[in-house]
Length: 481
Ligand SMILES: Cc1ncc(COP(=O)(O)O)c(C=O)c1O
Image (cartoon, rainbow, N blue to C red; front, side, top):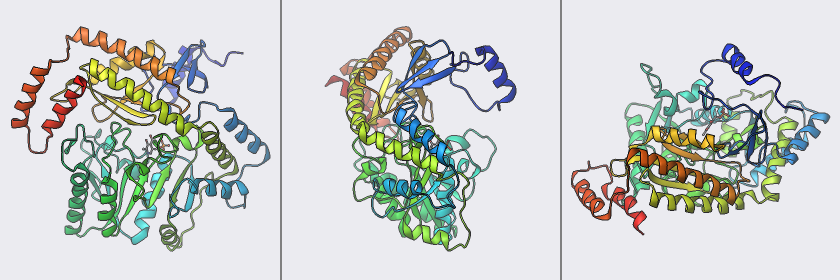
């Protein structure tokens, strides 16, 4: 039986009529109608298969049978709220906790990444009664009002709207395009000092910091990997001021980075956030999420006297699904797969960088990888239209990829964790082909070594103080090795 109920044009018409126009669709000129999915593949109404490089929600693979079975079996038995005792809730909390440092021991189950981050802000503000929040430039933390306020990725799109006076934006710790780059002697300290300066300014104005919030690796912000040691130093400044550190793992958690289960662990064992928020992959597509914090923060929240109740959060079906997701990650060694396949993908892409002038930077951990396209490797001019072209051409090859970052020029890989070496080979082969055609059409060529070295020495003299001239040159020299 066809999984399509309506003719595609009818679906488009009804969507236009009844769905809010700000709910955007992929490939708006020629949207894809997906009717089925399995593993790392999605199928349209005609049975055409697409390789999915973007759906990190379908973490253990679309419609994984173990997850579907766990949900269906529990749905047949019982689904109700967490005011009744139920083993799924406590067993799931115990299993999740076992993946985290001991100090993070108290869970609140909610239903979306936005709910998790909104609750994290409430916990932080209740903790010491402080109000001010520091967020990172280009960050996205969710769609509810409190989170639009701390999401420059979103509020920068609004003109004439005043930033919430309790929200302060620190520079994104982006060592490729940011304020302090890879050639800086200590970018971690330089970026952390920016946070400290903001805290000092808040104090001067009589404010008090409640929290610093950041994704452990910025995703919408352009697949940014903060320098190691940055979070430790930020946490020190923030805690000294009575605030807490919130790590948003909504996109990047659950083994995606390969070497660790949580992306904040990339910073080192000496770093433990005060709150971790989880979402997207946690339920493999089932709407659920979680906030994990310390006993101390949870007790402070309790002391307000207000009950916390959430109708759907932590229901037995969601917990059964969450448990099944954790089981599959272990059973199929998906964290190990992310490490192996992600490493292979990055190696392949690095080779492409040596060949294609449009590729400015490759960065990633495990199956979280960014390819930043630039029109000029010295000026870092974002190749935004070119990134869109790559995505549209890939769609013709039945590969789904997206572009993000403040300039929408970073190709984003975050596929289901069952992505294979062959999938990586295929995606990179197609990208190679598309970039070759694009560069031919644009007349773009890799400059020769002499030109680059001259350009670098010119730029070293003229670059503004905060710009990292030699890093840019270093980036460009990589392809000669
Ligand atoms: C880092 C991050 N945090 C929070 C959210 C919000 O999650 P949700 O859309 O489930 O509310 C998102 C969604 O894209 C996200 O990327």
